[in-house]
Amino acid sequence: ATTIAVTAERAQPQRDQPATLDQCRRCELWRNATQAVPGVGPRKARIMLVGEQPGDQEDLQGLPFVGPAGAVLDRALAEAGVVRDSVYLTNAVKHFKWELRGKRRLHKTPAQREVSACHVWLEQELEKVGPEVVVALGATALKSVLQDGSATMSAVIDAPFQHEGRWVVAVYHPSFVLRARDEESRRQAYDVIVAGLRQALTLGP
Ligand code: URA
Image (cartoon, rainbow, N blue to C red; front, side, top):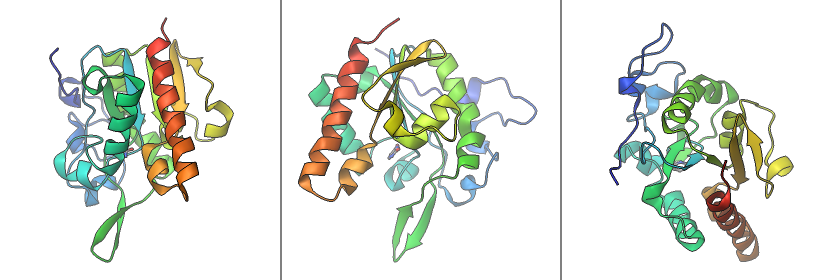
């Protein structure tokens, strides 16, 4: 299958929307980012995975989920029997938000106004790809997918539901596994991700 990056290049520019994602100035995050990171995957993927925002590695490489969180996601996908190249992978926010700690660029959670400003790009990806199932990886993704800044994971985790004609599966973000305080919590969070990905395989119209 041909894997393409669905960028905004072919989008119809609107008055308040730049022609390309990389030119986006809808919020201030572009200033400190190396580049915008578009989603990647097959044009008509059945499953779309939505993360939060690019991390340090993703910002440098211009690709989603290629850093440590991506390694956890890869393991979970393999365990769930989902082929990475068969799904469309993207983020709720397309520029890396970070702060300097020593020499490291540390991830900062995007503000709701930044998530809302970036939603137009996710919407465009949803329209183009038309997935049957959207897997929201963490709360930021869930808020963007539902366009509801007050959406919480606890209300929907482990319970797929339908939204605007497609299934939504909410699972923890892979970084949550990396940050969990002990082995037991790491295992539990990881198992939720694997179970959600397995569910995504079975859900359909
Ligand atoms: N975390 C995300 O949410 N997305 C990425 O692409 C990388 C890390």
